Length: 316
Image 1 (cartoon, helix red, strand yellow):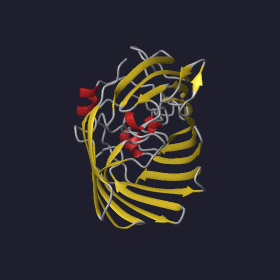
Image 2: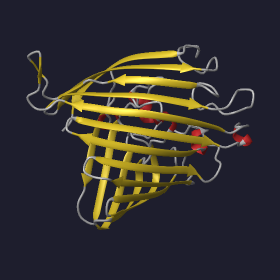
Image 3: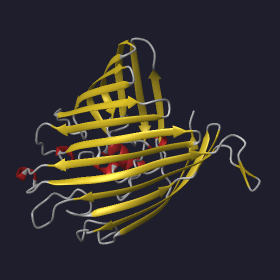
Image 4: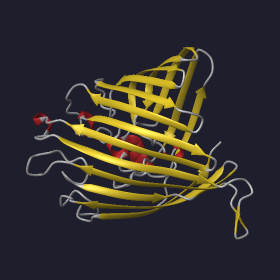
């Protein structure tokens, strides 16, 4: 499978008035979900102007941002070029991607705070509140806590707005370590959807998951068996996610049926030389305790998914 993206970025990162604009077409491949081609994804998700915001930064420590914002949630971003792996992971599937709203940022020494009021999962209902705090322990280690949730119950359901996740509370704890060629990022995630009979959630449900993202970048001049490894890196990701509830008690489906579980492994060897890059990817997902019709394959009964992808392109 070949992924397809063509995007242009405009930004200004200095002065009191700053901005960022992203335009183009994109696919958003994710583990355990059907693959959508760029035209379908662009039209169905965030349009050809997926992100763009104005930033007012009167001081180095304080700023206000408004527009179509990237999420504060999770360790992976929405678009492939900014991630270690081509596909987003199982935990990312529970998180929002792009939201319209306003965000305030403040830095006090080694701690950076952000607070946001927004629409959550692109729902056009401005009832979500987020708070994040990131502590830079030293030049190699950071620790982040993120809490978010919908302050009202909403019944919006579109391709970009999953009904149940748009009514959830979500919490992340993320640790990032960088040392020499290594970047290691374990993170924990918990989500909860309360009982909301009017949207079909007759019982509360939650997900609990953990992921490890890591990357090893070979140093300049590295060789293996006479083969030059300049520009080569080896990102990989492992995850586990479990949901609660049963079909019998009317809990919402947050994974592959109420009470289902899944684990995954993704390996994405990457080569970059100048503006050119190429990365093949292997991924495997296995689900358990699934509900027939809600898992993988044409009939939703398969319990495993294996994919091979290739992404090639230029960045300049």
